[in-house]
Image (cartoon, rainbow, N blue to C red; front, side):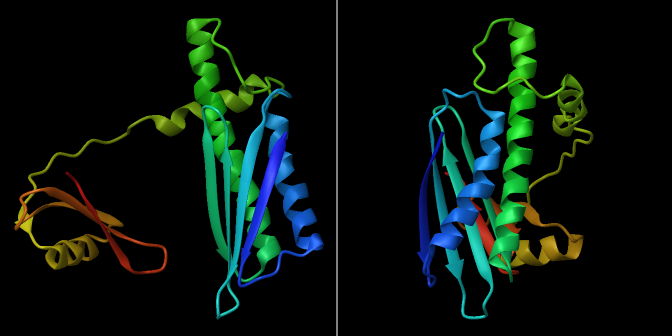
Length: 183
């Protein structure tokens, strides 16, 4: 059973919005056994340009599901969130069921009502099809962003010239850049 915590930023969470969110997100419960008790944190945000952002985090004992979607229509964003959550659940269920078949007896917390054919179609999603090796050149953050853009990639790994640490620059969904520094 999902316990909802729905919060709105720059928007009032009306009973109609609350009911829509709960009815849509509750659809993911069909993937779980009845004994699963989880909290669903939903954050609805409206920006000045009328674009909405919906974030859903479902916290369970051994699994955290999280999805985020931006859209001009909040109800459409909620629908897209449910699709993302279902994909995450199916991927995790595939992994758990594969381990269960290998061990024969691990405790499942997913209902096994879905056909095994659904599980086998997603097993290839984790296979590594290509491996690359390269030397990390010392450079600064700006040069790393330029290199990333020249290559047309969404991320770039480099050695920071000042700290000599391995860092990653990446392109965010909003078009800006992020930096991950390793320690």
